[in-house]
Image 1 (cartoon, rainbow, N blue to C red):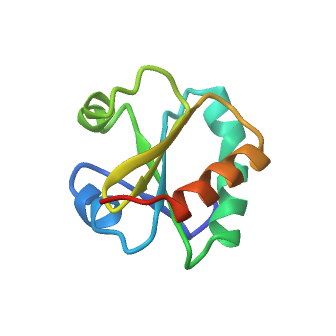
Image 2 (cartoon, helix red, strand yellow; image 1 turned 120 degrees about the vertical axis):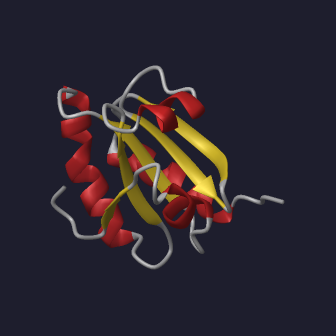
Length: 114
C-alpha cells in the first residue's frame, strides 16, 4: 500500500478501525494475486488523501482474513464495502472508476444509520 492513509484491517483490529470509527470507512477486500485489485489501489490512495478527515480507507486481504470475507459474503474481489457506524451502507464489486468510488463514498458520508 503506497499511501500511509490506507489502513490494514484484520480480524484483530476490525472493531477499532471499522465498527468504532468516527468517520465512514471504505473497506477494500482484496488479494495480492488479483489484477483488478492492484489496478484499483492507486485510486484508493488518491481518495484517501481527498477524503482525509471525512472518511477512512482500509484494506482486508481475503487470503489472510478469510473469516471477515465470509462474514460479509465476499464472493468476488475487489469488493468494496462502505461502513458507517459499523453498518454496511454501500457496496461495489469489481473494478470501477474513481468517479464511481468517490460518489459512493460521498453517499456513505451522508447516509443515515440508526
